[in-house]
Image (tube, rainbow, N blue to C red; front, side):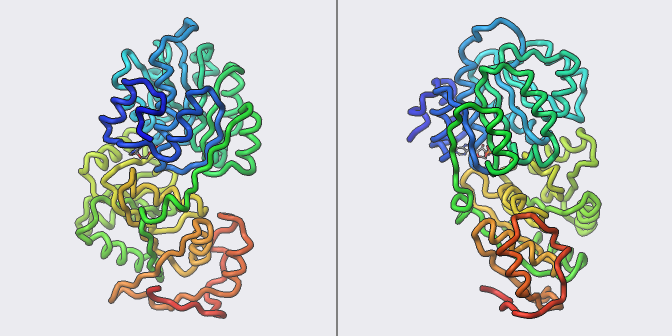
Length: 419
Ligand code: AMP
C-alpha cells in the first residue's frame, strides 16, 4: 500500500516521499490508520522497523489543523529513554513536518541547558520529545502546560522501565488529560511493561511485528571466539581493516573499555572515538555529529549511549563485549542494516561469554555462524557444556550474567569452526 493511501495529509506524504521512502514499513502500515482513527495502541516492534514515523506521521497529520484549545502547551508528548533517542526523534519530526507551517518541536533532555528549555517551553511548542527525568523537573516547576495534550507516546517503554523511570513516567502521565490518546511502543509487552500498558491505555489495539523475521537476511551475523582482551583487540584491528567497512559501531561492556578500545584504535591509525554516559552532552553530540557527517569511521560505545544512533553509513556493528541482556543484542545490531540496507554484525565472544551467546541465539531464533581468521585463532578450543545447553533452554533472556558461567568445563564438546 503506498503512503498516499494511509489517510495522511498531502504535506506529510510529500515530506515522506522527499525522505526517499517509497512505501510504508509493516509497523507503519498497521499503526498509522489506527492512530488516525484515534485508537490507543500497544506496539511491539524493534528499532529499525520505522516506528518513529509510525507514530509521528499521524500525530503531525493532526497538528496540521489548529487545536480547539487555546494555550501554548504541547499537543504531542513523546517520552524516550535516552537523550540521543529524543534528539533523533526531534530531528525526524522536523523532517516529516517540514511542509507544515509553524510546527515547533522541542527536545527536553538532561545534560542540556535547563534555562533554554524553560524558555522554549514557555513559547508555544507543538511537539515535546523528552527524557522523563528532565521533563519532570520542568513539570514540578510549573513550566509545562498539558491542557492541550492530545497524544502521549511512550517510546521504548521496556527500556525506560529498565532504566528505573517508572515513578517519573507515572508522575508525568498523572499530569496529562485523561482523554488523551496513548501509544506505547516496546520490544516486549509482557511483565511490568504489560502492567503499565494496562494502567495507561484504554481499550488499546495490539500490534505485534515479528522481530526475528524482520532481522533475517538484512543483517548478517557471525562470531569469533577470543581468548582475552588483547586477542579481542587484535581481532578488532584486523576486522576494521576490511575495505568493505563503511562506518563501524563497536560496543563495549564498560565506559572504561570504550575509552581504552577507542584510544588503542586511534594509536593504530583509525579515525575512532568513544561515546558513553560519562561524557557531557556537548561532547556526546559532537561525536555523534562527526559520525553522522562521516568524519569518524569507528565509534566505540556503551549500550546507554548508543540508543538512538541512526547513521545510515554504519555497515558493521561489532560486539567487542556481548551485552548482558539478549534484547540489547537485537538493539545493537539494529544500528546497522537501517531502512532496508544490508548490514554485518560481528561478535567477539570470550570463553566466559559463550553461554550468553547461546542465550542470544535462542532469543533471536537465529544461529550465529562461527568464523575463524587464519593467524588469529583462539588458543583454547571453545566448548559448549551440557550445563550451557540446559541453561540456554531454561533461563529467561538476560537472567544471568555470562561471567557466572563455569569456564573450562568440557563435557559435550560442540564442533567448532565454520558451520
Ligand atoms: P526507526 O525504527 O524509527 O528508528 O527507523 C529506522 C530507519 O528507517 C530510519 O532511518 C528511518 O529514516 C527509516 N525509515 C522509516 N520509515 C521508512 C520507510 N517507510 N521506508 C524507508 N525507510 C524508512
